[in-house]
Length: 309
Length: 297
Image 1 (cartoon, chains in turn cyan, red):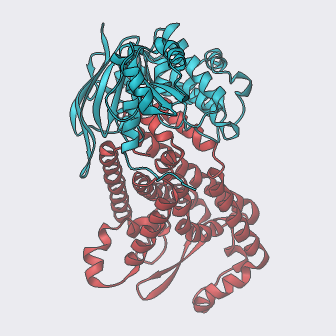
Image 2 (spheres, helix red, strand yellow):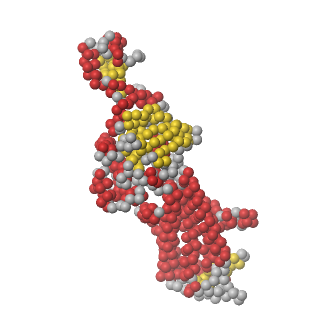
Image 3 (tube, helix red, strand yellow):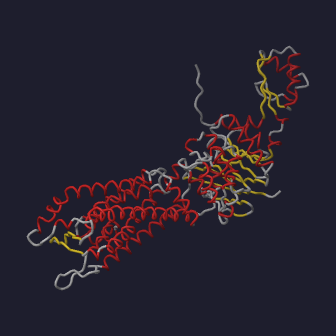
């Protein structure tokens, strides 16, 4: 499979701060590639380097098999991007914003093309309204229209669902699915939510403090056989002893807490058998081991102390 | 480039702040014209007090459209840099503030192109501003006060001079003066553009531009030999009022003004070259800095 983005040993330093550290990854043609990391992990810095907003300290970026530093215009002509917030000219209307950025991409602009694009993101009836009157979701959709207007092969979306309501999030997800499945676009989407990447991406990378933690297929990385089950019973020690002598013993995880790692499909059977063993359950929670790991990264970082009453 | 320039001019034309400068010029010119129409004679009495015994002047003819324009330009061309900075200082910092800079940079246009287009747009704005000034200060004044020979009051060294330029010898001087003023104000536009690269809102670069102009103007007016020789020749503010040179007419051996002549064309030409040199250096510096800048806004 041909690669669309190939990043090798990328590093970025701001003074003494190492924002990105020896990062390498590959995005293949047709991928919806999830770029996952907690806030401050280096996602936006990497995306800015892919879009030439920031110069790398070391390392190389190849896009469409061409070196970014030497084929900048040619490469950017084939990329559509929404970087962080979809900031546009607030004093202009949606149509004029779209027209300006389409012309900047060297496109011969027709009214029909622009209206079709606005139609695709559900803003055709607001074409002549100034952007300053738009909601966050509408701005986000217009930003995506701007990113797509020149029909790029690669679309880069930096946290596109930030600040959106549930309907806005669903709209963006559906749009990304359409771009990938119907139009065959390659999409790189960054997020700090594994649950979001899990739904739309086929491949993903997790970065932390500018370093790659893991990269691979979402289906493999989020294999259901690696589901972690946390059980809280009235008598945890008794429950653990009972499970230790049952067929579930092989799934028991070492440690004080009552935790099992197994296929998610087996959870209903486990609960039935726990009830049959007269174990009084307070709660049973399932989560993927990768999600647990990702959450631990967040938990181990500096955070505000929880409020206790 | 032409496509980008059209886009840039379209954006400028759609911003309300663009028209503040035009409204300000119109208001100032209208106030001047009203004041001189109502009580211009008092002003002339005051100005001519020291020379009334030496010259026979028809004061009613002295206040005419050409004279009015000269008075207005003397006052306005000191303030216009602020109006130019209003737009030029917003060039990059305004985009950074709105968040559109990252979108612009991620488009297939080079940073050099972007700076050149922003500079060209600021220059065109400056030209339109001066055209507007010509329409209001010159043509409106000619309509209101009529045309006649123009008197120029000048302090040269220790002595005061009054020069008279015949009315058929004035218009080309104004065109040349406005042309010179365009070059002079383009230096301000370039300086504002350069400063706007370092900021994320336009207030900072506007204030910085105005401060630089004020400080350099003060230095340009200090009469100390060491500054005269070593500092003033390098300050663009020393050449901002060079447009007046087009109204200093050469005289023959009998002291009679020579129609169509300039007292010191080489000095005007040198000033123009120095101003153009400033523009080239500042735009080059803008390109160099912007090409190395990480866009973090």
